[in-house]
Image (cartoon, rainbow, N blue to C red):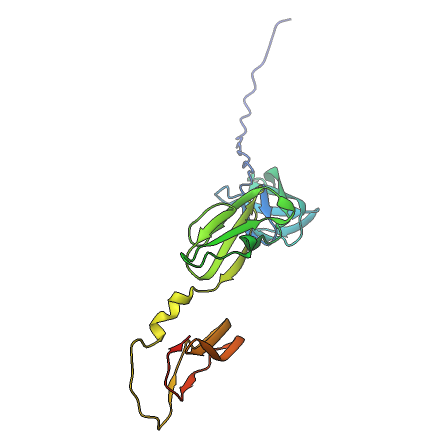
Length: 238
């Protein structure tokens, strides 16, 4: 009949905006790397992190460290009270791929050759199985082949195509000229008694020898250099 009745019955309605779950963090890492997944929303939000169906954290973040390569999936559920005893919630998932660390690179002296006159040592480094990657040396050089002119330790850092790094070190002997400052030069006149000694470098060397008039008197291999007693006239050399 076209008749209608308007009945006023106002009820207050509160609309609660559900929090948006969003996990921030790396999607690929190397083994034995510390990292964090973060999902902070703000306000009075409740957080629940799950891995394999198990609750692992109720913070806004989770700190992780894996020593085994693989694929790991984490889920974050965020909840905000709806004012009526319940919660509005939202969920996000995040997959992290953990890569195995590469093997340490192999460093060698090219052809075991040291150019003595200018003391140049060509070094070569390669990854195990010649896998692609980048080599960075502790002296600032880059690449798989470098030439160094100073003795001492050299470390090379290898970064594979997945961004994982590992390092190796080689110890290069110092040039003989490095020790020249140790030895006295010129002509000396000394009394026979008490006996005098000439002291060499106080460190271990692959080979060392004391000569008197071009004849080896004392020598050693992979030992600390011993002093030589001045017992006769002559030209003493090391």
